[in-house]
Image (tube, rainbow, N blue to C red; front, side, top):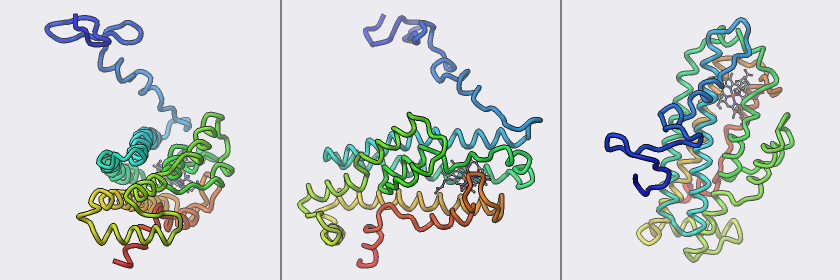
Length: 273
Ligand code: HEM
Ligand SMILES: N[C@@H](CC(=O)c1ccccc1NC=O)C(=O)O
């Protein structure tokens, strides 16, 4: 018997743990595979072959969104507590997830418009527009927009509460401004922030950690923009200029979102360097 918490015995020199239900831990019980692999329910009947792919892709997206929120929240908190190296480390992890999320579009594009058409009509009025975690990532990153909460149809109370909390809590940009303040800069006006950014950029050996943080934030912004651009081209390939199942104009609406930037001042800075 080891004194480690949760260790219930030893087997062939290996610590043996018992899960919540008292059973010996296995790969499947640890990862809750029975539950996880039972969550892919098709709307089409008879089943359209490609609908399993469509559901799987979206579920994988939502799992990664959960992880991204976990990392972005911790990165924001690390900035607030002055652990700049940790904030940077976690944002770099987020970048690798974001690249993977954009690459996943390749898999979905193996589906043809005709095969999507077999079940698309069953999806209305559901749409990616209703992804609560996607909107949480936008709010936490810095693009808070309460109108999205109002436009959401069919939000559960828990989801409403989650979005409300994200609208109230500090964003990554708010936390970065605290970092600038701790480095001795004023941030009360937009001009003072612009000035601070120019000084940081102009003396990188002195402000190395702050500059790196600005760079990883910009990278997060750029990768989000890359996903939006990739998504809209996929949409045009799949449904052309048809309206979306969520009730928007479709690709037209998505194109109107392409200019969104989380950190416009970091982009403006480029023009002055
Ligand atoms: C066949 C593939 C897809 C098509 C045709 C498609 C189409 C659309 C359309 C037309 C919209 C606009 C809202 C509306 O429905 O009216 C939209 C929004 C959205 N979709 Fe997709 N989508 C696809 C795949 C995905 C995937 C894999 C994700 C990953 C989670 C996703 C996430 C989103 C999000 C987050 C929005 C809201 C964007 C915003 O408001 O800026 N979509 N999609
Ligand atoms: N909005 C898409 C349908 C779609 O892609 C979708 C439908 C339900 C749940 C998630 C979806 N993904 C992204 O919008 C369409 O208009 O074809």
